[in-house]
Length: 285
Image (cartoon, rainbow, N blue to C red):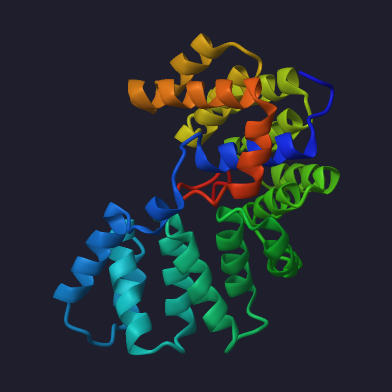
């Protein structure tokens, strides 16, 4: 691998990392996920009624789908309900509905333009969609809050990476690590920044450390598989991918990386036509 990947190559690997190596067509992305369909069905079965403060507190201990149905009901009853908009945007993003999450946060920001929480949710959703340059402004504003947590700083790092500002991105990742030492999601993002810059061996070492954490997510392991594959060790990468993927998916992922590495034109085509993936990106909230 060259000392530094080309801009097109960096963009293409970002798309792979954001999609966990899953190739989805634009048509497929517009189709509702199973969770979204289940949410719509649950909403149809509920009778709309204002929720009490106690119910709002209690629902945060429920599963994400239950939370989504609850906050969607509250938001439908009162679109000006700041708390409902914030929580619905957050939960939808965690369920994979980044586009709808961004829409809800943006609409609520029209009423609460300086709300740090809504700015953060809007930026997180945009970053999950791969729209880092658009996410920089809301995330930068959210990051000025003294109480901004590592997730916002981490997301700002990803947005900067997506915007091609790798040095600023790494500074934010390191800042996030000061707030959450050893957090595998941050270490994974920092490692991918080095991988995108052609430093695959250093990235692999960081990702292996992150993957050993009991807090490591499947995305961290998939990122490790990607970096190993980019070094040409496809069999090893496939074994790592098999931890969280089916044999068919793991094999397809490796074939996809091989095709990108062997045909530079595929990098260009991917960078020009790729749409944001539905699956959560390498960013973890």
